[in-house]
Image 1 (cartoon, one colour):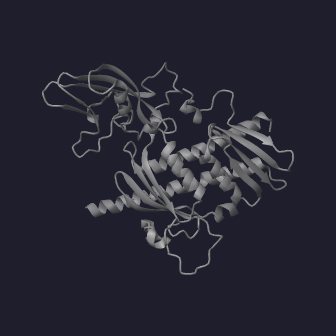
Image 2 (tube, chains in turn blue, yellow):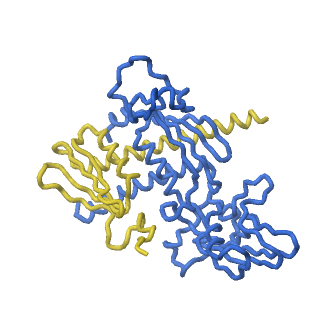
Image 3 (spheres, each protein chain N blue to C red):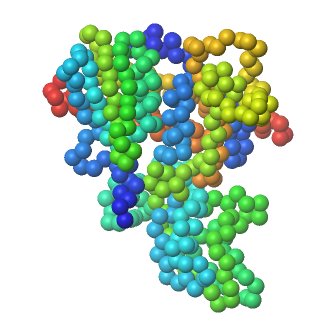
Length: 275
Length: 121
């Protein structure tokens, strides 16, 4: 291995500015723009999560159509911290789906009183033994979860949901992150962008909140053409299926796995060619 | 009706190899590698890392058509340095860097957790 190369690229540095239940706001430095962006792309699109993928509806006399309710059920965040324990349904050797590759949830609601009955996420009952896989995430102050459907007197909803592991590239319901804020060079010292203006760009564009974290350019400072983007201000907002720190760590892990697959494919090719 | 299945963006079908190496006969030590079922996430990352290697003379990637999930990476290296080795070195450097990043982030997170816990007390 080239040790000069390792030394030249200094250690990546992370400074967490704010960490809450749903967000982690951090500054990533001493990394390439390509790496920061690839990490962002992976966090949004390629982290495996669990979400409802199959809905078998037995009774639906509500005002919402079957597919409407099925679509809403798919978007419900389910606990995915232990998603590694679940197999991919495609890779599992069972027929269709089984306990090892899916989580079964049931929903039974029938409105008996005169008042409108609200069906919430907490009414979903998971069949899995482990409460950490597949249980709906309830971040509500009242502990009810997301509203799925409303029922009038004598309306009934009875369905069985199969939740499977997947990634957001297949459907956005599997994304663990709702939005990832990503900014670099708040003072545009690298001239990566040009500001549209009516009269004066500096007066018309508001200052980014990250502008306080970097030195503003001095007047008439010459343009540094050798500078590269080095500090990235990221804010990962979680949906609930994974806590924000796990999103970042899983993102790094998935990116490493993608790279490792390439190396093994190269080694397989070498052995095929007889090297 | 005409939309292909979404899983074709990342699932490698039988008979299709992940990588296809096509040496360029016109120039020495040059190879075009086709990555199947991958996108800019890997392409841009590998290209940028290859450019950091002083023995790599040329590195570029392109996604030939947005409807198909693949990209071509072109690498030209100095005499005596096979492009495959340059790619492998780039990937190993990246995996190491990501490892350090993972440890750094985990460390910072634990520190932040401790400091917020002591504030709550």
